[in-house]
Image (tube, rainbow, N blue to C red; front, top):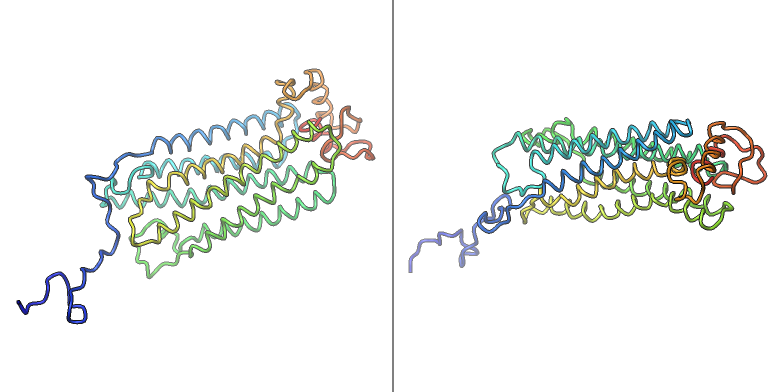
Length: 365
């Protein structure tokens, strides 16, 4: 027997060889057996189609509010900002697709550091525009609620929630703008890690939690008001559907949560190869749907006069009835309008306030 030590590694307790040390990073799969498909076309479609749908709803909202009832307000300008920031998020996603998203990580050139830096820089812009767009959508919804609710408690609750949303989203914005110090370190991994600071993952989970709590509170805010008004069951059901469409955004946020968690765990698991440019595709889908879905929901609250003018039968009214409702809205007068009371209206209040008249024609009249 040879006295020379085994070549596979040092001796363990002087009796048996140790296995060779593991590589510093998990190795990619064998190119001969690994799949080489890509999902770039799906990502392009999600980014563009979702934004186009949101933009159409914003255009319908401005036509309804600016032409039909002539009552543009701050909530409309907030939703315009929301769809512009959403366009920025879509552009950032497209930039990520150009630099690798939708493709397998092992199919990309590992020596192309410029593409990698561009990908992470686009990821930061996507986070920034995502927060800004969601923030503006929430501002649009809450300022509309405060404007149309005649019940004092509902307006006060809306104002309190508006303050919570502003403070929470300012924290999210500051977190994003200071993601790393200097900020360039967020995407430039060539910078020495011992000379930079980056927020721990707990900051981003806090942002996610605040977003979800705010979504639920905004969804619940109008429900007691709708429940307490006197309307035929069909009209009340329609109001619940209109205001309840915000639940769709809450549901999508819930669907995003496990995807976020899975991606977070995989990115920190140094024992397995994480094909993040390919495996994060579903998360990108849900982000586009959530972001633009919030805009669609904010616009749906205001489109009743549009459907009353062009599709009156869908609302169970004639074209002449809708024309009369629009005339009452444009006048903004205190003349008592025909039809059942709706959100914000109280039988003892005569004449109707401009806000009540507007809501009556827009949603429930």
